[in-house]
Amino acid sequence: MEKIMKISVALTITLLSVPTLAVADKAAEVNKIISQMMTDNYAARAIGSNCPSIRTVESKIGKAAMGLNKNLANQGYSRAEIRAGTKGIKIGALKAAGKQLAITKGATAGDKASYCNVGMTEISKKTYIGSVLKAK
Image 1 (cartoon, rainbow, N blue to C red):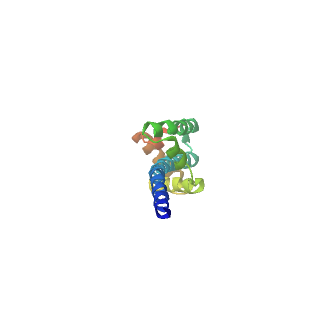
Image 2 (cartoon, rainbow, N blue to C red; image 1 turned 90 degrees about the vertical axis):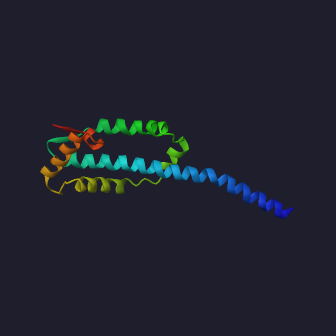
């Protein structure tokens, strides 16, 4: 009887952990999507703060962030997956990644013209980064 009880408990634990693993996998996907968007936002902010002829449109960033939850739900992610995906996001690391992304795209620290060039390229390509930038 005790052996059956142990097997039953082990089986129950196994069955209960399967959905948790699925949520964890989906949460990792959500985390990646959110992190990419935030990195892009910080890249746009780096461009806007370093180029005198381009500004970052914060209201567009805010609107995109507010719509992200709905977009993720429309992609099939559950509330639990979205909530779990927001945990562990490191803002400082994403800010650094955003600055690095601007550099990867061709900006050079201290060179305002290079940030302007990157910004104008992003605007002309109609990328997400370009969509939250505006030439003055």
